[in-house]
Image (tube, rainbow, N blue to C red):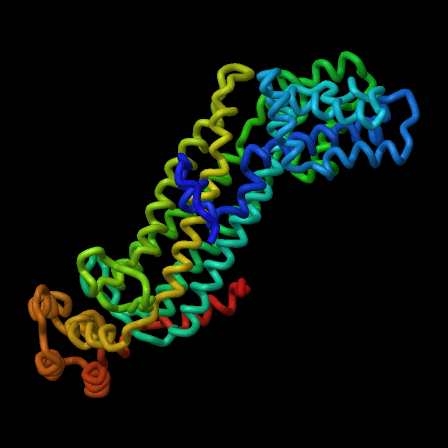
Length: 462
């Protein structure tokens, strides 16, 4: 087992590092530097191949050498860039100087002043973040799909098992296990569609968003079309034109609000499962060597759902702040977005921890049919709803009020309900017979049909 960093300031790099390691190469300092190099090299390639601004020949082998600066990026390269940054005190300029070093070593010093041509640092940074967020979004989608698949499996397997509902925490009209899980699958599916449709965007328009330098030295080039082509065909993200020095960040705000909503839905799952476990509706698997309580040996705590809830809460807090903050900038530029954006990986990190934790919790549970059935049997007063509804149909006097008097705040017996039904004056005998045969277990409405309907409408992720 890999030893955790006991001095890590953040749990993402300490206790939970293993859980979020797939995000490390995306959102770490290493990941950001890697994308900066990629964007700079892609821009140089675009200048050479598409804009043809360079008035000397560049061979195919030289093009290949240029591309290798990006393709061969590794931890050694990242460390070299950080060493340069220690002198420049500017992270993007350090990338530029590193690429110039590599070009010099390859005998391509003639190209050095075309590195970072016409760019402001934010052109490089915002494009890098767009690529990083695109990758992070794909990771988040993958785990959301796994969660949907798990929930759908539970729903399908237990779709016909009746269960007591609780509205305001009180016993209410019965449902089924399948239908309640399908409710969650539906909500997450809807949010997944929203998240999937949000396209990361980049801008590449200079110091104040107007292509000032570009247009001054090469006024005959359509820089608007050129930047759109570069962003879509070389960086593989969507282009945005109307910006100051920084990206308008609408897409990030939309992604973070979608993640916030998905997190809130998952918190709802966590809390419901916590409650169902406390009622005894679900049992948790006993893992022999685990300890539930340091003093109470009998306990198997719902720790995975609690862990998920806690981490999703942190995810929401940071995401909500950044979703609002990134839409603001003083005039054409301030640096508050720069430092805030460095926390974008933490949002995805806590989100992934939350999803993996709820999945772990769902893997450990199974229904306790005995207690579920017992609760249904012990709440026969739930049948006041269908009885008074039938009474309305057959014009019985004061149906709601009579059932309220009989059942509100009371435990009634099957015999008492049957006696009440027998005294109905206008309800046909066959309907009375049907009412007396009804039990809470049978009173689940169209819960099963709705569950089946979901599977017909939604393509399953599993």
